[in-house]
Image 1 (cartoon, rainbow, N blue to C red):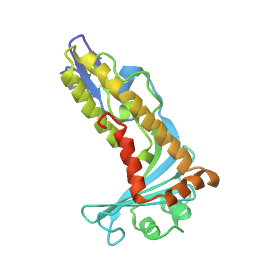
Image 2 (tube, helix red, strand yellow):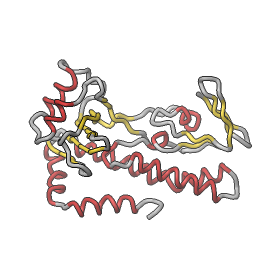
Image 3 (cartoon, one colour):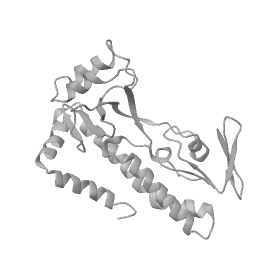
Image 4 (tube, one colour):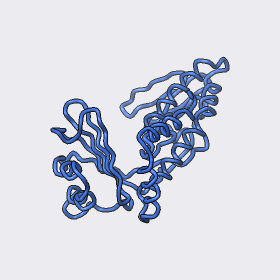
Length: 258
């Protein structure tokens, strides 16, 4: 895929020979964005230092309906979220060297060694998933870009500010992008480039702050030194659910809609 633009429009050329022309091209094509190369050149994603093992399994009593759970300990994490259709989404997280080979015995054995002694229902989750469907993800983010737009080309979501999932803000930040992009384009009287400049001015600093905080939280949650993550765990234990939710609300209120 490639893109080109003129003073009046922008065109996306797809690998199958199709083209699409409009007032602008929005690159919402993820951390390995093709559009980003046309906007800022080559940018190498950064390894965060953590990996995720994620998948879906049948619930069958593992997790209460409408109740998510997160377990923290030993610099590792496991989250469980019930879904429709009697399913549970699970995610394990730990610090692992980039490019680490598949361990002998496979991913299930790896998770047994890392999490097998954790409280119920985590051992049951490890035994129930289909190893062929388990996703092993080395988590990367993006460094701050010089800019998000070039003429009639712009970036949105992970293409502009891919982040580690430790604040749960990846999809949220993409939605903020979309709303502000629509508002800025819809309210400008000076043309597409002006609208894109306003969009970037409203969004770039906040999105980069989220990436930085998420990366720092990886370093804390998945530290090798117990004194690093121990202080964080103690703070969580001393807080309440209401305080945790309020902290999340404050993060959202810092945004352009607060």
